[in-house]
Image (cartoon, rainbow, N blue to C red; front, top):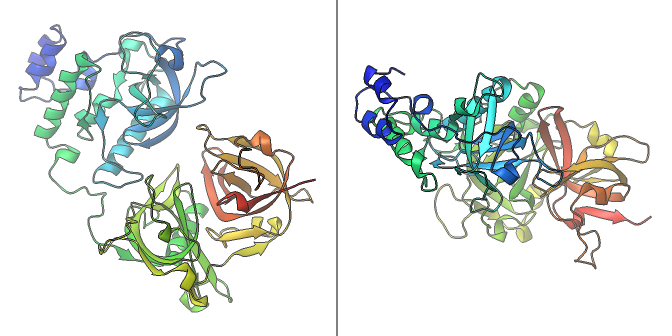
Length: 467
């Protein structure tokens, strides 16, 4: 950005003067790099969980104002991951809900964090001016965070780090929200917001977001969606044409777990199936964190649903932003076409029964369909999620064949007559034998690529076999 000579002269003034005076000038001000919004605490050897500041590596960039980081300094009993909700900003949604300019904000944040992670420095701090323990946001799981970065210098001095939160505001990717805990930064945040409005940057442009679908819903089949997912899984560089699109389709509920609705439908050879006997296709639909009416979640219910397709490194391809309202005539509201109790053979839910080895060799044939393994499996290992709300289990059959992993998204109760005993770590499962059912899905790892897994829907899908 261009800088006036006046700006250079004003740098020696107090913190408030540059933000307030320069905002009234016609020249563009680079508040991120040239203002006095600087980190005042040294991060070297500091533990974020104790000191409220620490150097980190990037784990995931979730959206425009949320990311997960791995602390470089921590005690044995500290969490493995810092889940950060960026302080002072509120970018448009790009995950559970899709809003204009949400995708652009998410891309901006991801690009800056990845660049800093690969070539520079990332430091996370609480909104504090002296060392102290950080605080959670209203969810009780994420830390309100200032994200300080240098995209070029590794282990940069703390006074050479720049505030990503402010950068989002300056580039017009976010409004200012709740900066009262850092009053020394407030004037600069608001000045950057005012400048972004005057320059009509991004969400302040008054123009439609070129990456947002403002049109109506496109009617597609689950088989069409499946074909595009298959291309993406075969070629990581393939761009799914449905990503970001508003889609409407029909299908039968195959299960509901962890706010994910699994939907399946059948297609004949004449309709494009790859097999003479026909083919089933499915999808996972994130319904949001609020409860939805049980009429939409009962297995065997035939639905018509509308939503926005997303394709991300973290979640893979899924549907989201659906409206699951009990009483609504809106075009984009989910509709029960046939209740489960009245469903016919034409739209009946299909569960596939086969050995674990057969499933392993099937590729994407049964993707997002219910499966039941005909052989008992043994858990050989696994890992717990960083946030402790899911468990991944490695399993094998009696012949020693490694099978698709089991992904448990709920607190598992191994005994039907004992509701108090709960297993919530993979260590509880190791060495045990199970009969397994669930939804056949996939997972994309940054290290190992695509791997397939079975996702139990409830306790009944994971039956402990006493030996």
